[in-house]
Amino acid sequence: MALRASYTRPELERELHEMLNLYALETNALNRSVRLPVLLTPLRDQLASGLHRVMNTAATQLASEVVRFVYRRGRDEPRAN
Image (cartoon, rainbow, N blue to C red; front, top):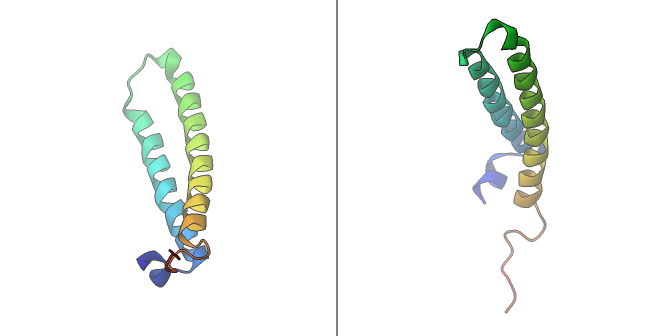
């Protein structure tokens, strides 16, 4: 598999996590484009912060699961009939 040939396991996990983390940061930055009355701004910021935490946690788990799938034993071995 191309991913296994191109990345070590830690490198792939780090790169995947970084990409997903950047997506979470971009989503958080879009928070500022939502116009709300001034009184609701703290609520918007609190919700955005919570969403960022959840997305970052999911990024860590997803990167780990993808790497586990890519590097599982016997992945490229031919199957017996």
